[in-house]
Image (cartoon, rainbow, N blue to C red; front, side):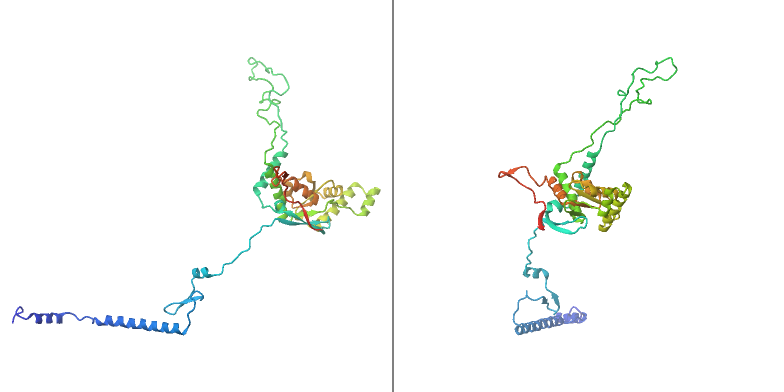
Length: 353
């Protein structure tokens, strides 16, 4: 029989036999069935566990369980929603600071007073301090330099010699700026170097300087009448005329040096500025004899630069009050409210006597 005369069924059988062998299709189905059975077994185990343990809140646990029995920490975003909110107390800023009043020169504490933070606890403002120091420096410049112009120099304004015929260079008057003894071109004249600064800005800078000293512990407030009495033996000899002026000055210098070294106020620890509310002859004389160890000034002679220049400030209580009272224009208004002027914060309220 020829190929064309063979039955169709026989030819299909031969074609199937000639094809390469393939993996039986039932293997994939078997794998799927096996996976399904494992999943059902896991569900049955989880159901039995739930039956054994009562239902608990998922949120109360600190960790959750995955399908592969691996533990992980509870998500923070979920715990924050259920966490107990924390309450914070309201912050109240400080309105006053304590100031200890000492006895001079023993520095024994005598009393305690309270000052407003607007007086002795202002934040450091270098820009305001710079403006105040420049303002004070400009005001202290004398500005007395003066020269004469050619029209102010004494003498005749005639021509020195004829223009021609002498063989010399042509010349004008003897007051010419190019001649010796003549006038000065564009020379200095008396002028005022002072500048302007708002009063309130200057007062804030003044209290800022005091606050800077207070914050650093360099503001020592003493009782009124700050004097430095000398020993009675020396006083009797001085009154009797048995001590010369040079010996007296040397004794005052040594006496003041002992006081400064005992309190660490000497030049080695920074010079000291003593501010008094009136004349203190004994203190001023002994401090003058001590030389460059410090200075003594009256309250009316002190400015912002003096407060910042020395290492510390030793001041009387009355002088401190006068300083603050005269430099609080930004805290006191001149506008009447309900028929009365608004006063500033209390200056030096006693706490402990």
